[in-house]
Image (cartoon, rainbow, N blue to C red; front, side):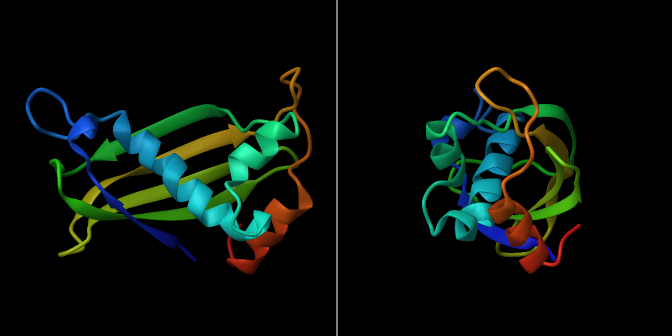
Length: 138
């Protein structure tokens, strides 16, 4: 079941033409992912809490399709769904839509691998797995 996170496009998210700069959509994927996993760390910033413990979740594959531009001040909603999780990895589907109309803006997938400070894959923490199960994903 998709988890929804509201976002507002900031002026700094746009290019010289006034449209959202396409890599910023991947930034919003991370915003949605952190919001998705916030219950796993009792509201603490999930990826920061794991980073302090010596773990990170780098992206290893990403794809996106863009349907409609956003501009500074536009409000949107990003839907985050974990569509696959392995022992140390997860793939997140995302869909961005205009908040007011629900019109699609962008969608895609990003795959991540949970690694230690040596960048060796390590099992996803049980609290992340539990959050995925509680949300009914994967």
